[in-house]
Amino acid sequence: MLNGKTILLIVTGGIAAYKSLILVRRLREGGATVRTVLTAAGEKFVTPLSVSALSHEQVYTDMFSLTDEAEMGHLRLSQEADLIVVAPATADILAKMANGLADDLASTVLLAADAPVLVAPAMNHRMWRHPATVANMAALEARGVQRIGPNDGSLAEDESGPGRMAEPEEILAAVEAALGAAHRPLAGRRALVTSGPTYEAIDPVRFLGNRSSGKQGHAIAAALATLGAETVLVTGPVALADPVGVETVHVESAREMLAACEAALPADIAVCAAAVSDWRAGQVADRKMKKEDRGPPDLPLTENPDILATLGRSARRPDLVVGFAAETENVVANAQAKRARKGCDWIVANDVSPATGTFGGDANRVHLIRADGVEDWPRLAKEDVAHRLAGRIAEALENENRESLRAEAAE
Ligand code: C5P
Image 1 (tube, rainbow, N blue to C red):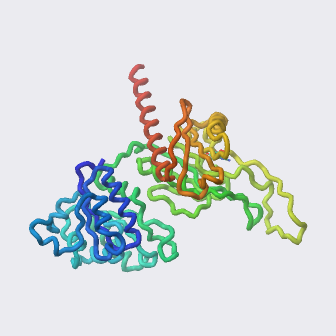
Image 2: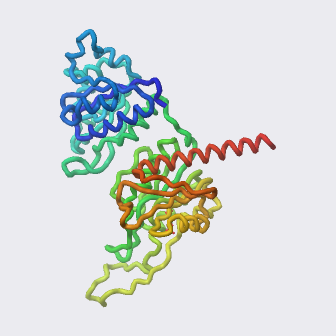
Image 3: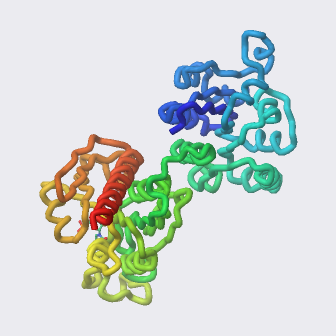
């Protein structure tokens, strides 16, 4: 998708610079030529050697080395780029760009640039929120500089807030969008994704919950959005940032989750990845239950609505309904039965027996169960499971489109 494109990547000094190495790889996998400028501070975090090994191109670190005839001058470096990407973009480089400073190779290239510029800011949340940075960013955006992120989440120094550099996949999607090269087979489709656990109140302070982290569901919402779907994510309480480019609705209980899903219809695609609590307290105490009152309480439970089954049988059923099955034994057989029982088209079955580390972990080994067979996927990062699943969804809807066009033509 990026074949024939030249990206000039400017890596400035921030802890997020290691993620720029992954970005280099992703850009090259997409077919781009990647030339990199490393600032002096950037070199403190990644080495020219590691960048050039991944980019298969020379890395430029010093303005004065470019005066050699045999080397590429800074004007050529920026003129030959289809897009300049600054990732990570520190508060310092944003300030230089906003004010037209040119005291090193990176800032000089940026000042001489005709190519469009995309920045991926990364810094401490206080620096991001400082009026100076806010004004610099606004000035740059007013001049047409594009921005991806920063995301909200945990930062270096054990702090959290807005300031995390966007993930390489998100930057890649922004690069593709900036170059008009995005592969967006789900453009024009609406997707609904559930994620995370639900919390079912027992009294004002206690709840029934589960250990779902929401990582898989959030990654699926982000992957569907990357392929162009207008995506609504309905999530229970999680410690994750809202995915970029996804409308995120926060709920607590299963009943709230169902209501939010119904409000998000119509949709073409529904992926239910939430770990919805099967039961809730029959009666929620309106005051904190006290140990002294009467010893351990009786806690009669009542069944929660099944969101997946409700969507699967709804009059406004999405064209493609995908459920998850977390199993600890007979994974495929149980999941196949669940597919029929819940009225969904596909089930993504995963083994969550404690030894697999799936819950809260970053990887997942799944089987995709469809009416016509089972695909066993290798153990993959949850993001990669998400991208594969989003790809399969896009293929299925494209095929369905083709078939309905063929049927129409035959009529
Ligand atoms: O029956 P079980 O909980 O194993 O089914 C898992 C699948 O059903 C998941 O896709 C989950 O998101 C969905 N589910 C739901 N509402 C419930 C229970 C499960 O949407 N109340």
